[in-house]
Each structure stands twice: as C-alpha cells, then as structure tokens.
Amino acid sequence: MIRTLRPRIAVLALAVLVSASAASAQEVAVPIYGRWTGVFRPLVVTSLQSGSNGADRYTGSVELIPVHESGLDMYAVTVTLSSNVAAQMLEWGVSMGRCGSKLIMLENANQLPQIEMRSGGEGEIKHTVALNMDNHKTYQVGVFRNGHAQQNMVACANLKLDDRWK
Image 1 (cartoon, rainbow, N blue to C red):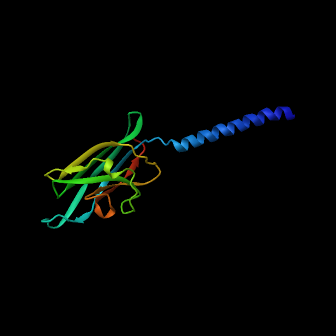
Image 2: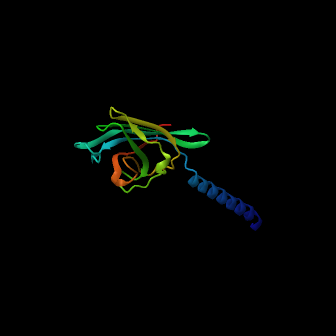
Image 3: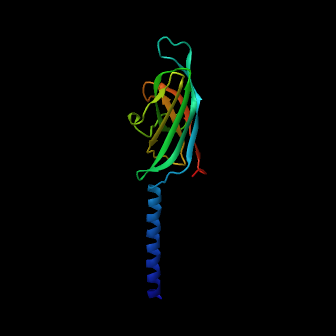
C-alpha cells in the first residue's frame, strides 16, 4: 500500500509545482488587449498669456489601440483637441486614477511628442508608446501647458476600456 501511494504523491507534488509556476508566470506577463477611449472634459483655465481675455477651453477625444510593434506590445495613441486658443504647444500624458486624482504618470513627460495647436485652434497627435496598463485599474489622459504638473492641466479625459475590441 505504501509503495502505490509514493508515486501518486510525487505526481501530485509535481502537478502543484507546475500549476504554481504557471500562475506566477500569468501574473508577471499581463498581455494588453482592448481599446481605451476617453472624451476630454472642458476645464476652464484662466489664461496665463498676456493679451488674452477670458478663459481658455479645451475639448476633444483620445483613443489607445493595442498594437504589436518590433516584438513589443504597445499602444497607438491618438489625441484630438479643439481650443479657443490657437498656435501653442501642449504636452500630454497617461496617469493612473481618474480626472482630479493625484497624477501618477505612466511614462516620462519628455519622451512624448507635444501637441501643436494650429492657427484654427485644432491639434492632433498620433504616437505609439509602451504603457504598462492593467485592465482592472482606472486611467486618465491629461493635457498640460507649461509642464506636467497638476496645476498646469488644461484638459482631462477618463479612459474607458472596451475589452470586446480585439
């Protein structure tokens, strides 16, 4: 009886080890899937530019689509903005949390190209970037004037995951 139990115990122990290593591998490698989208909230920003009357307003949308490029999982990001202020350069970035929460940026600000607002008050940026986003967390995209600081945010979009999109 003891001889027949030893092989079964060994097989059971091996099965536990294999399943544990598979589970830990799944926790480390989180594949990206799904499309993230958001609409920029029109924040009213008191203009800091000399000669400007009233308040600056920014509206638009953002879309992050998963792509596999150069052997890496990345996101193709498109930010489209409209404003009553023309001919300016704006910065942008992806942060954890919802609009209004403390900024925890997912990338270095100087690694992203700026959005050039044209003379008609329209601007768009398309850029591919590696972002480590968890499908079970919340994210926001902020648009900034004069640096990636909370007080410099001129527009914000809460991102929504569409995991049906493949």
